[in-house]
Amino acid sequence: MNDTTQALRFGGGPPKAEATIQMAPMIDIVFLLICFYLLVAQLITAQSDPAVQLPTMTSPLAALEQPAELVVNLRDDGTVLVSNQPLDAAGLRAVLSASVAEADPSLRVVIRADRRQEYRRLHAVMAICRELNIRQVILRAQGGER
Image 1 (tube, one colour):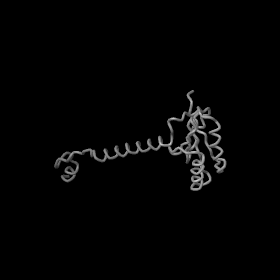
Image 2 (spheres, one colour; image 1 turned 90 degrees about the vertical axis):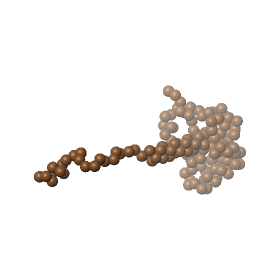
Image 3 (tube, one colour; image 1 turned 120 degrees about the vertical axis):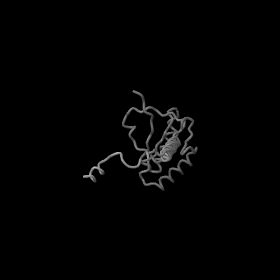
Image 4 (spheres, helix red, strand yellow; image 1 turned 30 degrees about the vertical axis):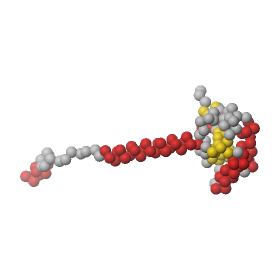
């Protein structure tokens, strides 16, 4: 009986050390999260040109489209940008043909054309895509307010 009371007694014995919170791993995780968000924000802004004003879309289903492999920005002055590099028609044709050669035939091209630019410039970019047999050409539009 003496053994049982000894086993059930609480609070006896030497005092135990208190639990502490380790701050170094938590600081490491927070630092990694900040680096991740900065990297993702940089990658997102690298493909969009702030000088391009997109037209407003009318269909809410257009916002569900998948991201494309190649983004072509068309400014209002007719400048064509791919990865923030200005290109002429021959340069755009070379970049698109290289992308088609290294990607499978399902290459998608997203054209972000400024709403103030002339349609003939957009038509020229789409004609290059048609010549290279790129079947998935997406015209990007900005979502409107309701």
